[in-house]
Structure formats: C-alpha cells, structure tokens
Length: 346
Ligand SMILES: Cc1cc2nc3c(=O)[nH]c(=O)nc-3n(C[C@H](O)[C@H](O)[C@H](O)COP(=O)(O)OP(=O)(O)OC[C@H]3O[C@@H](n4cnc5c(N)ncnc54)[C@H](O)[C@@H]3O)c2cc1C
Image (cartoon, rainbow, N blue to C red):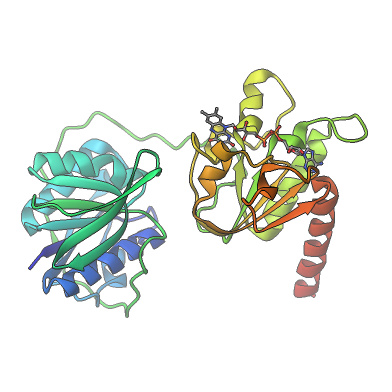
C-alpha cells in the first residue's frame, strides 16, 4: 500500500493549473491501484479556492501552507512549505505537476527528507510495484524504472496524464506550520522575453514553426522581414497557435541579420531547443533538418510548406508537404481565417 501525496502550488488567482489537475488524476489512479490513500498538499497565498475545486477527489486529508510569503515562487519558502507538508503527511510517494516552480524545489525537498526524485515523468503504472516512465538526456532516452527508496517524488510532465475532474465542494484544509526560512529574496516582478505578445502557448492544438527562410532573400531578390512578421503574428492571433522556431532563425539576432522581433531562443524547437506537445504542427520556411525535427517527436500530425521539393520534411518527416511559397500560402490562410472570424461574428 502506498501513501500518496499530491503536491501543487496554486496560481496567482487562487486556482489550480491544468497540469495540476493532470498530476492529481495520476495521483488518484496510483492511490486506487495500490490500494493506498491520497492526501492533498497545497502551497500558495490562499489555498482554499483550489482545495474546494478538488474537494471530492477522495483525499483523506487536505494540508495547506498558505500566507503571503507562499504566494510568490521562491525556492526558500516553497521548499520550506513542501518539506513541512511532506513531514506532516508522511507519504511514500509524492506526485507533483511539472512547471518551473515545482521542478525547482522538488529535488531539494526530496534530499531534505531522505527521498529520491524523478523529473520528466510521462507515465506511472502499477504492475505489482509502481513503475515510472521518464525521459533522460533532453528527452532522447526513455526509461521505465521502479525504486525501493521512499519517499519517492514524481514530477509529472504536462499533457501526460488524464486530468482529474469532479464536483467542487468545501474542503477542510489543515494549515501546516512552516518554519520560516528567513529568506532575503523578494520577487519584484516577472521579466519575460516576449514583450506584449504571448507566442508560446503550451495548450494550443497547433504548433506553427517559422524557419530562417522567412528572413532570406525571396524570388524577387528582396528580404521581406516586416511582411513575414505581419503574416506570422496575424496567423497566431486568429488561430491561437503556439510559435516555434528553427535554431537558424533565432540565432540570427546575434549575427546582426534580419530578425523577427517577437522571436527568442525560448521559441527554438529541436535537439538544443524544446520538444513541445501539440496535436498538429505546421512548419514554414524551415528545411526540416534532423536536429530540428527531433524536437517534433510529440507532434502527432505534421505538415510543412517549403519551396524546395527536396527539403528534409519531404524525406519522410512530414505527413504532408506543400511545395509552395509560404508568404503566398499564409497570406491566403490569413484571409480565409479573417473571413471565418467575420462570419462567426456576424
Ligand atoms: C549540434 C547541433 C544542434 C542543433 N540544434 C538545433 C535545434 O535545436 N533546432 C533547430 O532548429 N536546429 C538545430 N540545429 C541546426 C539545424 O541543423 C539546421 O541548421 C537548422 O534547423 C536550419 O534552420 P532552417 O531550416 O530554418 O534554415 P535553412 O536551412 O536556411 O532553411 C530555410 C528553408 O526555408 C525555405 N524557404 C525560403 N523561402 C521560402 C518561402 N518563401 N516559402 C517556403 N519556403 C521557403 C528554403 O527552401 C529552406 O528549406 C542544430 C545543429 C547542430 C549541429
């Protein structure tokens, strides 16, 4: 029997993120399949709203570390809060959603309580013992493993587990006393590389990838970077797609070449970039070389637009390749989307 602790931080508005519901779904399943119990542990400024949202999840106990100092993502206070919750719950397995906040403090907390931690977990199965599937080495190797060590901390990737859903209610949250870590760190704000425009949308159905071709000389011998910006941003706004990039395109800002202003290294997809998860992907003006396409492993349906009928995508890496000018295609696509939006509003 395993004693499962679902551990999550609440968002600034007091709610739980989608990935937290997914981690709770995984925690509930493991508790049921091992014949164990489920405890909920929440960290945040005020955790009551989040606890109420999952009040009927079957947890034997709701533990909270709340107060102004836990509203901010800060290693010292987050780790102290998580340590206090873990010591109170005495779990054998802790399941948390992967995000920048939990991924930062979970390994440290595991060390403090003499446990082990697994990050990048994509599946948890119960086959006699608990078996965890996780990625290593920038998601190039997958392993299935189990451990005798407890407590075992599992940080579950977003999109990997079925999200918990259930009726809301009123949860009786037991406040856990946290030893103040006397932190001097104050979070004064968030600086994100994209000013104004949010282009990375992990929950989007579609990944739109822009390659270096957008800023290269076109058949008329000219560069059309500002039109490229307009077309790409226009498409992102109407479609709600997430924006990815090839390495060549994001590297250009350092080389003093024409650039797309809203693009940063955070958009880079590939071997030395990210490996996003979306149902569909559309690559434009990108050659589709292996170091880039390796980042597409979780994109289910792939399409590419390239002038070159012999590009990398055409060699078995995409389901559909449109041999066409991406400027022309996206101009037409944006016009069709604008018509559709207008018709929907009329
Ligand atoms: C160790 C290592 C790690 C790497 N890691 C990564 C990584 O993480 N991610 C990554 O992306 N790359 C990575 N690379 C680089 C990768 O090998 C490629 O060089 C890069 O992906 C090429 O980018 P691109 O396709 O945008 O540019 P290009 O190769 O310049 O291709 C531009 C494409 O645009 C097309 N094009 C131009 N105009 C149009 C138009 N009007 N319509 C349609 N198509 C048009 C051209 O036909 C061409 O195919 C790595 C390389 C190495 C050696």
